[in-house]
Length: 91
Ligand SMILES: [Zn+2]
Image 1 (cartoon, protein in one colour):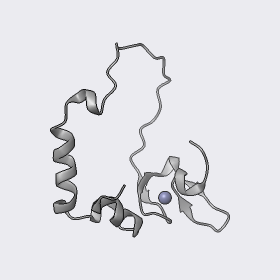
Image 2: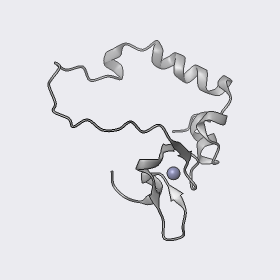
Image 3: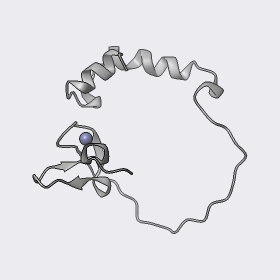
């Protein structure tokens, strides 16, 4: 949580505007990690799902700037369109 990336995000810089020099070492670290350090691998299980239309429209949260699919955004009483964490709602 003290990484330069998180500091920039706290300052309101959108993730896509953070320089590659800051992001790439984090990506390289994850790519070089053993899978069991960041994945929970279990047997495949079948889940029934209803077909839904794909969502391909995203916009930046008015509070934190995170790019968010519009169907997951919430409208605040103040008229801002925000991501779920910024809305204060649970998932
Ligand atoms: Zn947000």
